[in-house]
Image (tube, rainbow, N blue to C red; front, top):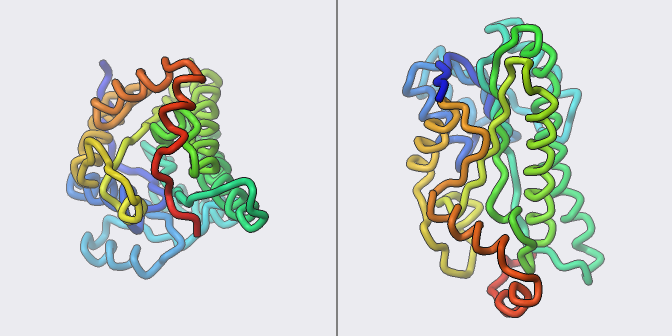
Length: 256
């Protein structure tokens, strides 16, 4: 398996959770990190911790123009990055019967799916020209089946998995790799509100280390932790009638 050295990378959603853990991991390896997030003050705290290694961009991944401007700036400063990680994401409970949740559906889809597209788009041409680079999308095992009470999140992650597969095939032979990462339960601010048991829960720092190992090896599809890959396999294999019966009374993520 090929191993790629990572000297520079872009991480969206880098102010907390998995994104921050990934930033820490690569910064400790000496890489230059272009950190994107809405909360600029947290990015500057990261930059103070690693002087000279962090480029801070306080942008919302829903704003394609702002992301493009950030990409133009960092390419001018450090050249085309080795890796771009589209990590920014949100998770909120949703129920279709409530009109108020339509706005929540829009927000989740815009950030988790279209935000991924808008994060990658400014770098694809430069990576094609260089005939190298890795695009990494953070999806989720929640995209394997539709989870009750989390329909927006499951739909966004299922769409992300399909989008990343399409992108991987589109870029085949170009020298640009696409890596899909599907985390299970990772201890982050996003999961602290979950009112149900979270099997195989991983600390964010450990998850980041395992993700980076897969990115370095340019594995096409990664499920972390590995136990959730087995769970996902079983879930996908369940016939619809049995899946429905098992999950109809499953605990649900709180609505906003």
